[in-house]
Length: 316
Figure 1 (tube, rainbow, N blue to C red):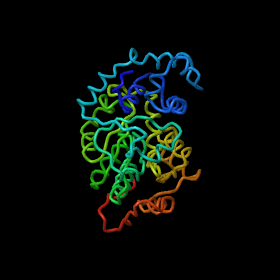
Figure 2: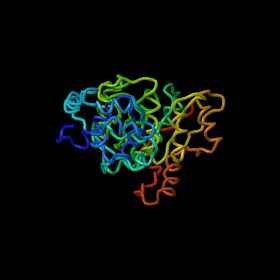
Figure 3: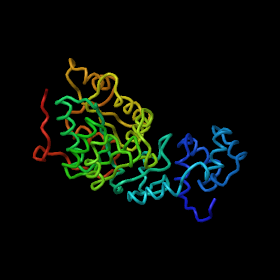
Figure 4: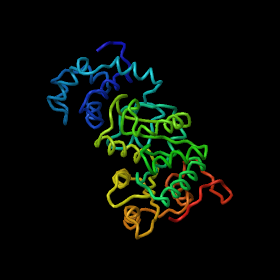
């Protein structure tokens, strides 16, 4: 290993190795103390770490022939991205405490300490007019009150959540399930550019990694882990949003849900969440009041007054 390698570059090299992942890297860090020492270790030393195995140990020991570190760094510079590790002060502290926290994040835009106080908002890709209006109202209120809105840039409710946070002149973070150079869905590129100017687009994946069925559930754990609480706006009985809600519960987060008509399949998931203990939400203050109880040291968000600008909620 070149002696000039920085710690962030060492994390980047590990992130480029396939099948290594945050859980294995955490075990390796416990054993070796730093990413630089991991990359300098011999195959036999790496293989002795629980959960690594011979094949992974050989790949890590031969990392210089396995990855194109210089090529990835060139892509990062070209797109003016920054890298964030768990050792950086701007790394979300709640996410840092989760079991499988990513050890490296690619950031397009800028994060601030304010983004540590965030609320995740997710919902169906195929929303109804009711779901769209609920997402507009609540996302706008949350961002207007000073919390960062975190979502996944997906079609549907995610897109509405980001757009409404921007309309409130608040901050929003999009966590995507692809590399930033292969942004998905592609039609949200203009929205991503706006988010990067008023927050950040974030990924744990190398710049040109394509999205697939595995990357989206992995992305969802970051949305859930980053946030103080998770709001599900609209979700059918089988929905990726419910997977995110389960991840939030496992990470000790409060789950909030918007009730919907009992005769609409698009509301079944949210109604079930409420039945199982999620907090029913009809106004942004329902969330803010609860978070002030759970996080009394957080910045005191102002009450959302009736005179404050907000979207109108209408039934379908």
